[in-house]
Amino acid sequence: MPDVLAPALIAGEWTTDGATAERVGPYVRAVVSRAVRADDAMVRTAVHYAHNGGRQAMAALAPATRSGILERAAAAALRQRAALAELLALELGKPVKDGGGEIDRVADTLAVCAAEARRIGGDVLPVAGWARGVGNTALTYRAPAGVALAITPFNAPANLLAHKLGASFAAGNTTIVKAPPQAPAVSAAVVGLLRDAGAPPEAVQLLHGGGAVGAALCAAPEVSVISFTGSAETGAAVARAAGAKRLVLELGGNAATIVCADADIALAAAVCARTGYTNSGQSCISVQRVYVHRSRYTEFADAFTKEVAALKVGDPLDPATDVGSMVDDDAAERVVTWTAAAAAAGATIPLGGTRTGATLAPTVVLGPPADADVVRREVFGALVAVLPFDDFAAVLADCNSSRYGLQAGLFTNDIGRILTAWRELEVGGLIVNGSSNYRLDHVPFGGVKDSGFGRESPAAMIEDYTVVKTLLLRGLSIWGTG
Image (cartoon, rainbow, N blue to C red; front, side):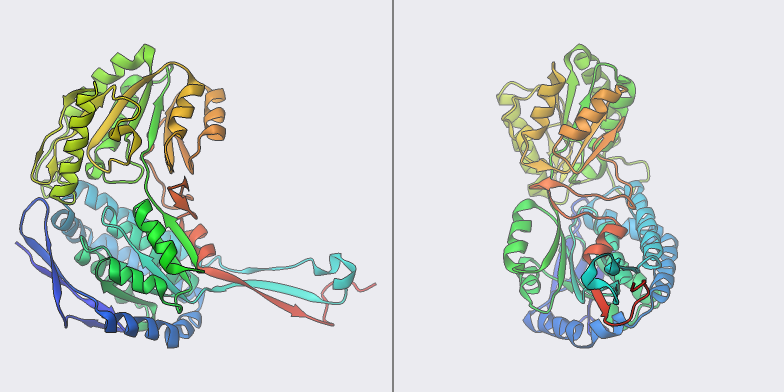
């Protein structure tokens, strides 16, 4: 069994010195990686290096140079696809078929960041449109924010790191990455893609550790902007620690998908089954609540249960596996407990509700009460709840009753319903004739309410990672002065 040492990257040097933390693979039940744990001195060194020299070195790097480095990193991700997918399987229990797809997205994300780096510019302002501006010229450009902090989650550690690091690098920042303790080796490998592609030493630093390391980095006054992906509760802690800093928070969800009476039931059942259990449901937009029109409810429930039963559960290193393990035993046990509570409250459990270690059997919960944990809270596990609805306006209200608002799915061909849902649903994105669990990495992604704020796509994130600087030329005008 591989035991990969995940080094820290501080002040331009990879280091293996210091105490380490072991990562036990949730499926293989053995140590698969060890991370060099950051101490207070490492945190201070990283912040000092970023602020004193790192900012200036990166800001001096031309956008074309940044773009070329990102393009080489994207190509390298594809060359290392198999090895990186295996690391994801070992550290997280993610099936290699899903891990390979994540690495494909890493390559796409870095390539889009490269393209967006070439587009960074500014404006000539219409300063002479008002009398006091006559005789002057005003220009703007987007300058790097300075020091960016990227705090990444375990569920998609490679691609979400590519989004944060790629956009920050494209913008011309120096970046400090705080990796998730569950995926240290994967995180080090993605950072290595950028360094090996020619990024200067000042471009990125990598620290491993838990909440204390993240809190210290968030509180550092030298940090200009923070991008965090994780739970709503931790996001609130990040905001408190950060104080008056620019924040991009992509937090939790308990996404709903609506299946209307005119929907293609076979398609909806197949899509919801596939996207409800990808990565064992450990995605903020994973299908969690499916509301089906009562006239088609039994038909959907039967088709959906049949599709879920056909999913292959087992070794994440097996290319045929659809569902591997969850991140740890506690996460799987929580879902088992919530399932049992829903059953006690009257729900039917045709499949699942059991676990073997951290591997949760794909679980279907039919007709739970509206106040059940599997409906009201974020499951973040291999469980989908299916509920009937009668009235479209009422089901939109049911969807909106959640504290979260990331994405929703809608199966219908009625343009009126589509536009109504787009207007009325309190979410950041609506997927039509698809489930909530669909994302294009170059399209703005983010939520409302407790799902956070800001948008994650390279173009949107570059705006967050840059500041507008204005140049006002008095007595020099490109405009008429008469």
